[in-house]
Amino acid sequence: MNEIKTLNSGEKYAHASVGQLHEFEGKQFVKDSTGATSCEISFGSLPNGEAVPFFHSHKENEENYIILSGAGKFQVDGDVFDVAEGSVIRVSTKCDRNLKCTSEVPMTYVCIQAKEGRLGGYTMTDAEITERENLL
Ligand code: ZN
Image (cartoon, rainbow, N blue to C red; front, side, top):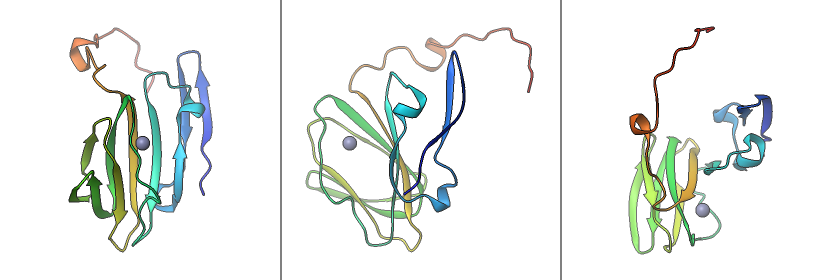
């Protein structure tokens, strides 16, 4: 099981890491390490032939799964479909979901959980180009 580490933080940010993804195992939630207020992010990894040991649903939060490596099957209620590295799967509230790794390499994924129907302004309707000295 990996440990998440807070690497550095400031008044307006926090930087945490679960480390090398090819070595990542199990499940790790991120919110407590970054202090996020808009969503919960988790990293997960399943070895070949393994599924999450239970189905679950959410009352208010939708989930967006991003498959970072490997491949497998995803089930939402009675629907099953193939997923692979690069897949992004949005799952609504009030339905059951699970995923299973079928590839030789572990299936590593990120899940972002946020209140369903609450996304208002985003990207350029929320962002502003600002003037700042580039220190990079
Ligand atoms: Zn969930």
